[in-house]
Length: 162
Image (cartoon, rainbow, N blue to C red; front, top):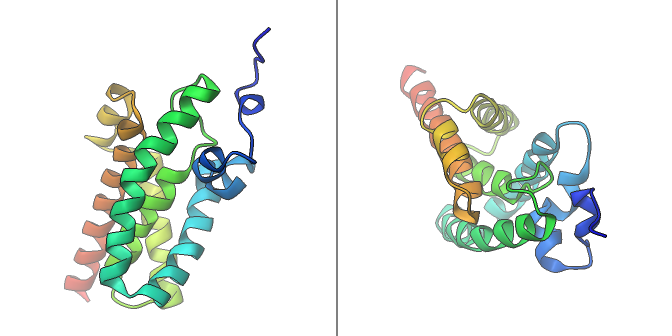
């Protein structure tokens, strides 16, 4: 008999599943996407400091490509497209926003996190369209990239108006 709980179909011993659920942050309740974004923000800040912006952006692009596979494989193993526990896409989305902030100060880091979560939850057009229409690892990833783009746009507007 197939287990009804999709979380029972994955293992944190499997590196694909472990990464897809954000090192376990996507298993936290409530609001796994927020927990995933929080851990992604922490890791992103550390990586940005260690790597610099240019290398961090290259890593972020590689994480996007890897994420298409990780998210699809884990979703297939769970038997659910874009289960809430899959938060690798939140990591990549918040990485994009962190790369756009003018300084790695606490107010800007909190702004990056807050704006990304706002747009990821709200899903304005075309985010909701892609979220509903693309049923692949790419689809899981791309809606968070669009949420990040919206957040980056707001960050740029804030900088212009300052």
